[in-house]
Image: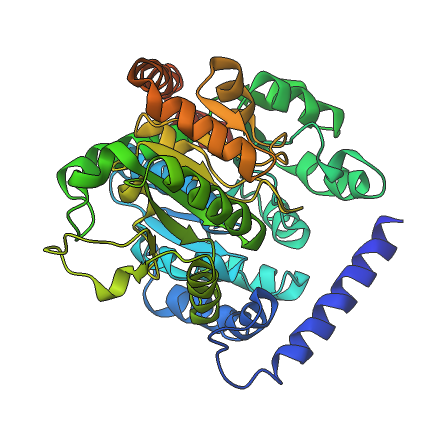
Length: 437
């Protein structure tokens, strides 16, 4: 059964590799799938050349793999802590989704690239060349052939910031078979919570090798928020803080209800403004969002066209630039996080919470541990339509004591959950010590 599954798996990967040959130019605005095909074409060669020409064999190498931009936040703080704890090390970063391609350029790694096709032969070759001291996967993405080839060579694999939500398909047939063949084969799991640890145990992993370390993303957003307070975006937004809504990582469904709500809110509080940062800042998405604003009679501007001296951002400011969303949250009075109206699920709520802001989101949030806890604390609210957004925002804007209480609870959540990065690196060091005995 396992042999047959791997044969089918490698056959499909080879088909994908052949298909990538026909993607001759890097797609700029097309799907993540096509961008991923193009990016993976050169990944094996880049890693091999770095290993043969640039890798220092006298310095330990760590291979860190993330799925997308969201996991980069967790992996980044772990990488920094590894360098601080272990001194001179080399870090190889690979990622799966094209959403991580640009953020990866600022990652503290010696090389970053797409994960090559997970073929047994290719992964065996790369491991012989790179010879990593350990491989760190993030959340729940473990690639079977990379993991298996590492196991053959005595290279420890560790799943950090590990999370397996209650409603994850990996707990259901047939996806649970994949979990048993991959996740259950790593050498240690650094789980973000006790419940996640229990669900990993249900997937076949030895409970003795599961350690609850917390979520490193909390440390990352806390540090980033403090840095943002000193730097901030290249725009003076201070005069709008008391009436500013910042909506981040939005999709079309989020934007529809947000703009409808803004029209209603402004009929009562005309000073209210909104900044919207789409999850994907492709020109076509920016154009679509801009048209939606105009169709509703809203005065709209784009971030790239403004200067720091700008005193008027319009009713809606559409952000057409990546990397500044966490900074923008610090200027908001209320935040909104997108993804809760799609089957992809809610995006990270930690950035606005680290800024001490109340957060709103759609109904598809249950796979987010932080969102569930923040709802219990009264920091977050679920909104189902434009009317609910209007009601919640009006309540918050009309009572400053409510905003103050929410802010304290939000910062309290961050303070209570800090320290996961050090615990994660402790586990990594313990695993390395065990393997090096």
